[in-house]
Amino acid sequence: MTSNQLDKKSEAWSALFSEPMSELVKRYTSSVFFDKRMWRADIAGSLAHAQMLSAQGIIGANDLAAIQKGMAQITEEIESERFEWKLDLEDVHLNIEARLTQLVGDAGKRLHTGRSRNDQVATDVRLWLREEIDTLAPLLRQMQMALIEVADQNVDTILPGFTHMQVAQPVSFAHHLLAYVEMFSRDEHRLADVRKRVNHLPLGAAALAGTSYPLDREMVAKSLGFDGVCQNSLDAVSDRDFAIEFSSFASITMMHVSRLAEEIVLWMSQNFSFIDLADRYCTGSSIMPQKRNPDVAELARGKSGRVVGHLMGLLTLMKGQPLTYNKDNQEDKEPLFDTVDTVRDTLRIMSEMVGGITVKKDAMERAALKGYATATDLADYLVKKGLPFRDAHEVVAHAVKSAIHLGRDLSELPLESLQAFNASIGQDVFEVLTLRGSLNARNVLGGTAPAQVRAQLARHRARLS
Ligand code: ARG
Image (cartoon, rainbow, N blue to C red):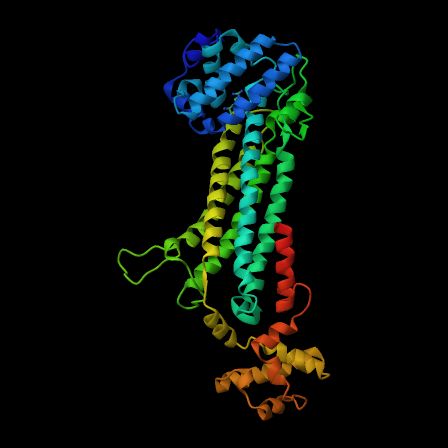
């Protein structure tokens, strides 16, 4: 295309076309208003391609210099928001190429030698996503650090642990928070693994079959920081696994966030009253003056739905697509962009919010004293006295039943009453029935005993430093 032809692409793609594209089709098929966000990647990819073309003697050194000069100006124009994005030019790639040709003439027209928008867009998305991955990784660590800081202050804070949302056994609040650290640490590793498969270069696959020019793809990969080159040109232009894998990572991370968010909402409700959130993370009600709602946590929980939705969207987008590039693929960008934005903002806001929670230790402990959270400890005590576990379980069920009847905790029953259930119960049982006794007893690797929790805290700190 001449620069003039590029400007008027909408009028007709080439001499082959006898009528212009309809306005509706133009709007329907264009992507520039969302894919312009990849402009930096597009320019970086073009510069690496041009350098290689020149090194291989496919374009002249003077062409390369002109392209570099033109791209510097375009960068400047985009950064200062003076660049005029044209819907007529469909996407970020054609917009930048057309401007380049306008600025530097024939050298601009030589840039597309041995390249197609198919390998170009696949390269741009990967480059763009790699940058974003590198900003998300520290946010995952920040999230873990925020949880660790709160955990550090709450190794000896006891709350009821739940199964089936019923009081189960007392646990350290730090232990509870460190469960989320485990989740976000797995997310961090998953992201690093996704990055490996994002970081391969499609450029050089051209439209689908490779190109007749003697390209040095390894050189381009190296200059763009890719770990390797996509080895099959058909796969290179059509593969979007990396975007799906990233969305899977994002969905799992958001699922973790939603679990934490849900607990925050519960803990903040009057029925629990385990924590309080700083006012800056709460909203009021226009009708109920007493309200302080944990909107941020609720929204984070809700936004997990949209990220999972994007994953389903991308899977469905790729399902059944024949090789190779199909225009369907243009639909990969909005879900991917929105996924990145949502995860980034959510991790930021959640780590800030978690870092600033007020822990109501007394309320947690009071709740742990309800619901016979130390019943298992009594059973374990009886096992130590020689009872088989199943018999001990039965004895304690009777004791709990009687305690419920009397409206008391197990620790509030007189020794004689407890001995009526089993004669081997002695005065030392009361130590076992305390919350702290229960915690200390769980001194197994990964258990909630404060000594174990402190060891885990140290391990996480060392890992994150
Ligand atoms: N805007 C397109 C996309 O996002 C670029 C590739 C277009 N290639 C093509 N042959 N129409 O996928």
